[in-house]
Length: 321
Image (tube, rainbow, N blue to C red; front, side, top):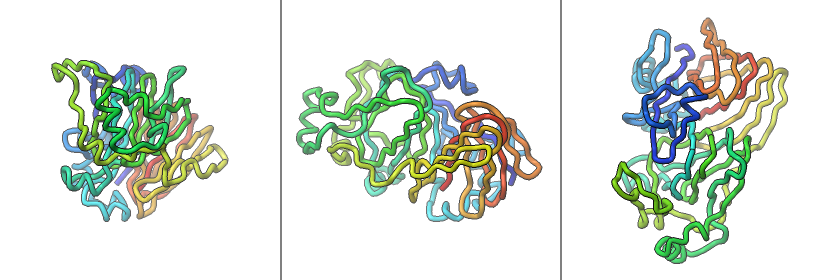
């Protein structure tokens, strides 16, 4: 199979903005584009092949046509496609929320839990995220804060800037606040438990969006964030690119490549690679296939494709299993 450009699935929400439509090439008739699902096999939210002989196929159909070998050996332990990669544009605050681990998710709806990581692409001055709690509290104290509308008093706010990277492990209370554009790599799950949503009205629900208090209290670790995995562990200065290893875990591996002229890498039989263009423009070559790249593009490189080369001036987020 050849390297393949993918068209994202666009999602509109109460908090979504216009940047992905205006500056990142996402084409949609939706009122806003809160999220662009760049690598997705999630039902009814799949990305599709953009160009070439498989044009228009969903990612699931592409895998069926070419065989699961294009995902690599690391994917064999998962019954379903294991990751979901997005752009997120928060023009307003997201709800204060938490995601379950695999064990709880399996009992809840039979799906994956959700550990995720965020790379901050751009943000407004003063932008911040919610990341765990200011201090360790009991589940009962957290429940009381929810009941008394004091969630914002107990959470931990973190100021952010472009280039920041965060690991949000399952069970960590969190929220993306307004004015942030980020890239997210996560488990293939859409289970979100809302603890608090600023008491705002949502016309789509004709009232406030539903909260999930019992589930939130079931899964939330009521303490300051303490990721169990190191992030931003290694920087390689190559001839033509600077590559930063952002995260390596048993779920996914994430790198950032700042390409000034040329970046060469490869995929072996262990995993595919997904490249997402955060900034700049250039092209990628693999075998006899050449794809032009610009900000907002996503390219799937199948496992076993061998060497590929990216040239130009651009910043990439590279994800693998």
